[in-house]
Image (cartoon, rainbow, N blue to C red):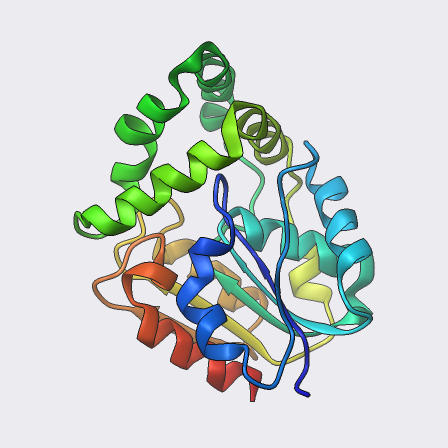
Length: 229
């Protein structure tokens, strides 16, 4: 059996975010998609990942999942044999973004989660409209619900800057990957990541936005497969 692989999904996402990669990479290895719904701090979310993960594993996180992956490194970096950071951000949240979280939480708790995902979130995810991916995003958010949206929003709002842990972490096989058209975590953020970890393989996927696992599944799977081997 190969090294176990743990995926960490983005905000209001579940294993469906990585469905093409799970299908392709499960042969010969255990593949887990962790649940990031049960706590409202990045520290607690990472601790939960570590409680359920194998003793040593490869770790791949997208967006919020990448932020939690950085905290996993802080708490137990010796257990992470390989690291992949996809469409994510090592910085603390900007004050202007923090300021908007309360209204979003209020709207979700008032029963408007679906409408808010449709008008404020999903349109920013993709490089180009895709009805199938958009439906998957809506379904994932509906399945998780407003309480999870509130917890995850607070975790992102209060997250620490993670640049120090990436700069100082022991070198391990590392992949940095993003979509060229990502408007939430733009290429400049990944340039920063690569500056902190210059040993990493750095891949930018043309024609993809914030969700390359679904927008460019074959290219993303190929990059992850190379990273794993």
